[in-house]
Amino acid sequence: MVTVASDTVDRVVGLETGADDYIAKPFEPRELLARVKSVLRRSAGGVVAAGPRVRMGRRVLDLERRVLVDPADNSEETLTASEFDLLKVFAENPNRPLQRDWLLEVTAHREMEAFDRAVDLRITRLRRKIEPDPAHPDAIRTVRGVGYMFVPPTD
Image 1 (cartoon, rainbow, N blue to C red):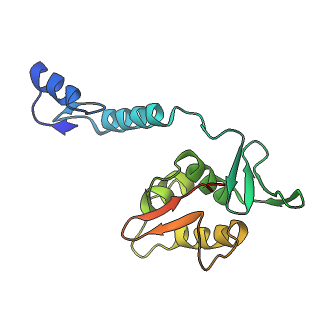
Image 2: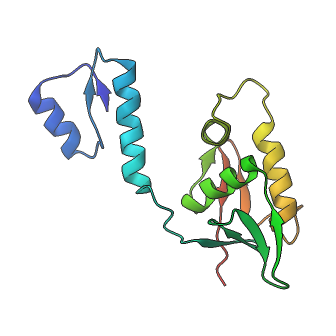
Image 3: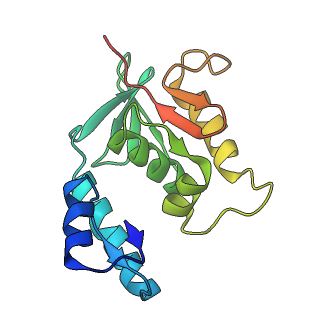
């Protein structure tokens, strides 16, 4: 919560009503960034809850070896660093719509520019690798107006 109200009562009420953190204006941008990173670390737990292997579509992502494994014949497909980073972010955030610009920031470590299609191109390449039918994706779904969402298989 970022607000001009800086009294102790205001901070307590803000935190009790559900805010993960509270910072009063004026604030230092570096402090705000540090607080945001802290909340993200706490929410993600710093660990992939899914374990060292995550099923994604018709493949399995091996997080330790950074490869996609086909369970049918145990063949492996290597991933580029950006493809692995993107799949790892999806594995850490299942069933949660993720914004395209945020995905680019956390995987490419840069901000999205107007008409930037880098994330969309990576998603297209990944869908070809993991989806049974890339034209009708089930594992990495498009969320209109937001971005993409990883939906783990139910079987």
